[in-house]
Structure formats: structure tokens, C-alpha cells
Image (cartoon, rainbow, N blue to C red):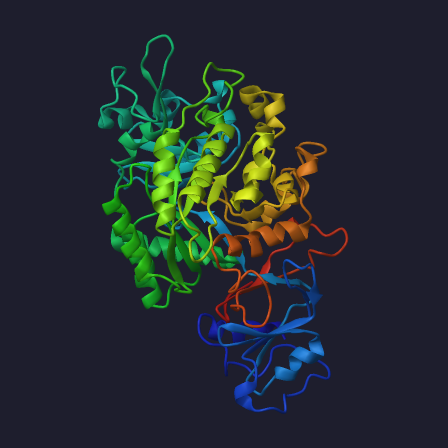
Length: 574
């Protein structure tokens, strides 16, 4: 049977399953549906535990016709839609869940990053070995580019250009931290960018300098990294299309059927259009366009035109704008209400409250959903204030008002109930709250133990009535939803550190965590009537896992994706 499964599905991946196979697997008592063939299902998933989503209910099977789910219920009831050409997938006792919807990714950037050096939170020796090996394996590359290093992997909590010079002495190198807000560059890269000890810090950026000599250390924070980033080789259109294709393959492998990609541009939207036209866009893409609080009326007109061209498209849609308000705690660039515990700064927002209010009110008045990157408690409060001001100034948009705050890594307790009161969505990435050995002490050191206890308060927000949407910020962290589900439900790293978890009171149940990745993300993109649940009429985006993750004692990291169904078609099989 396993051989037949592989042969049959291998022949139909990416095309309609109708007519591909009469059935897959053995189902005692499941005969051919006596009804008309045109009423039969194209695909039936049975033999598993179907999590309907949001209600906590479970069923035994589901049926798909075309791109929609047509029946969810008992095995007997669903197999009443089985016809001579219906394909039947046996879940083999695994969980069947809605397709995961990652509420915050950088899809094009993630695809491009897959071909660069991949770093992690390992010790410096391991990081150095990877960089050296990658450079040796790619002598043809004019730059060595990569991402993923952690601050605490280095003595002094920050890398230096001299360290990178020793690893890449023959060409420029540019490596971003795991949070994407800090770049580590070598001396050659600094020279090409013209950065010296006399170069002033750009607005909203910091050139980290040696406290004795004043020379750049090779660390560029926030906008300071753009001086080097703009010198990097630019991928061709063909290379960017291939990068997105590779990113889509990774999404399908881990069960992600929808992504909400941020910092988008008109050129990026055109790439998705081309892939959709060629049939290569195997995920649903919502694009949040990049803008700044100095957005003008003519800028907003251009944004409106792009949105109109993609309104109500089930595959590619443009319906949101993104504003960057602050940085990250680790680099002391998150905007805080009180000074950092280890440095005489509170972090500076990128824009004033007046600038933010003007932009949000303008965009809200045109019906845009606004996503505001806000990590520090001051930035979170500024975003909430801006949304409240826009609601007072403008009439309620026809489709509702669902503004979002991206990340919400720390917030003042007084602001927690404001999310529900204002209808603001907390878009969080639970894998960022992975309490790796360096994360807990780093937060306590930088913002103090009391504020560290407010980190990633997704359970508190959910209990307060706030809407919660989960994602990963890929490529900042891996796309695999299992990692976020694990952290959200245990508040421990995959290796079990620390004992007892980081703020165990913020743990979610597995159902709550999956809902945040599915129904919550769907609501956050105005798609709750289309996806996020397994019910008749919903889009047929479904994930079959290899084990029943809801069984007592089951561990989400012990499962994997057996099948990914997108738009009614099997696009991945393990």
C-alpha cells in the first residue's frame, strides 16, 4: 500500500487529484458512493483525528471538492461522498488540522537567504567554522552574506570586525543577527561603505564604536546597516522568482499554506503575480506594503492603486501597510517607558507620536489595515494611542477596523486591556520567546528582572480578550510551526532549558496555540470566512500530521507533516 501511495500521489502533486486514483488505502465497508459522480468528492481524508479549529471539536474525516471543503463529520458520513474517482488519503491515526497561516514572514527575503550561510545560537567556534567553510565552498561569490547569529555567542555580547576579518579576509562580509536588526561586517565592507570613526550615526541607527579609539567595531544597528546592505549584489528577477519558489517548497514541507509577508513592494507583488500566472504560487500570500509615517497623500494614492488591483484575490492580496516604530531589546533599540537597566537610554522611537498619529489616521481613513512593529513597552503604547486617535477621527471602515501590533515583546500591564477594547490584534512569534540559555539572563540584565517577567505575554493577552495571531518572522527564525507550538505550550526551549519554563503562566493549550496559527491568523487578515477552520465552504487548505498531537502525553516536536493540501491539491507528501 505504501508503494501505491507514493506512486499515485507522486503522479498528481500540484495538479487536480480528480481521476488520479480510485482510492488510497484499505477502508473496510467503504464502498463507492451510489450518488452521481459529479456530486462525489475529489479527495477524502479519513483515518485520523480531525481538529475542526477554534471550537475545540474533533471529527473523523473530511471531504474536498475542487478548492473547497464540502463535508466534515463521521467517517461513514464523509465517505458517503466517495465516488469511483475519489482519492482517499489515510491519515493513519495522525492529527488533521487547518493549514498553518504564518502571520508574519518576509517571504522573498527568506527565499533569498536559503542560499546564504546559516548561523544559529551556537558557540563562537561553531559560528566561525560555518562561515569559514561557506566562504571556502563559494570562492566565486563577491560577498559572503548570511544571518542567524545570537549576541551572546560572542565574548562581550557583540562580535567584532577583526573576528570576521580572520574568517573572510579576501572580500566583504555582511551577516545579520537572528533578530534582523543588527549587522556584523568585516573591515572590507566598512571600507566599501565609507564608514570610519568620523562617520555620523544615521537617523534611527547606530555605528557601534570602540570606546577607546572611536573606530567602528563592525557592528551596525538598525538603519546604520543600510550603508552596507545597499552595496550587496542584487538578485536578478529570475533569481528572485526561484527564491520564492524555494521558499514555497519549504512552506509546503512544514504545513504552511498561507503567509502574510511584510515590508512588501510593488515589484515584489509583481513577482507573486507572475508565479500565480505560471501556477507556481503554492501558498496564499497577503502582502503588507512598506511605508513610513511621512507617507503623503500621493504616496497613499499609489498604495491604494496597488491594493485595488489585488482586492479579494484568494491567492495574492494586498490589504495592509507596515510601519517600523522601534528596534529590539537585545540591541537597546526597543523604545521603553523607563531606561534600560544596564545602559543610560530608553531607546528612541523612530518617529514621534505626532508623526505616527498623522500617518495612521491618514491610512485608516483610506481603509488600510496598519501593522506597527513595536517591541518595547513605549512603542506598544504609542501604537495603541495612534490606533485610538484614528478611531476617533475616522468612521469605521466598511470591512471593520483590525489594526495590528507586530511582535509585542514587552508591554506595560496598563496597556493589556486596550488590545481588546480597541480591537487591536497582537501578532506575535512564539519562537522568539524561546528561552535559550542566554535569553533569560540577557533580558533580565538589559531591562531588569521585573520587566523581563512581561516577555511575550500571549496567554495574558488571550485571557484579556485580545485577538492573537502567530507567525515566525521567517527568515529571522525557522518557518516550521512545530517550534512555535512547542514554545507556546511549554515556554521552554526544544532542549528543555530552563527547568520549569520561562513564565510558565503564559503557556497556552495546544488548541489555543494551533488556533493562533490558524483561526487567529485568518481573522488578522480578514479571512475568517475563508480559512482557519475545517468546515464546509472553507478553502481546502489542510495539514495531515504523522501522529495525534492531541493524544495524552504527545509531544508536538515528535510529529511531522505527512501531507499538505493546498487549494484542494496535495502539494507535499512525506
